[in-house]
Length: 94
Figure 1 (cartoon, rainbow, N blue to C red):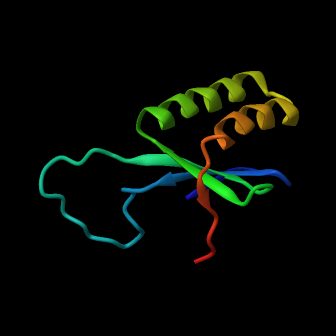
Figure 2: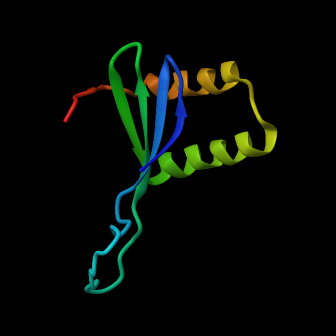
């Protein structure tokens, strides 16, 4: 799990769901599809959305574009605001 962005309004975490943990000795029974995604937390509403599959791929393209163009914080948060509209799950502390 890697925090990619953290501000007063949003947090974005890249989650590698099938990444082996350090010291693990897991032997796969056949091919595995690597699954990863992004969790976007809207701190203002207390809700989060998890992007995987094609949504994660689209968001990864956005991140790559940001790496090349270095957007302002306002531009990043405007984009995250669009994804925050998908957020339905309340953030729960574990």
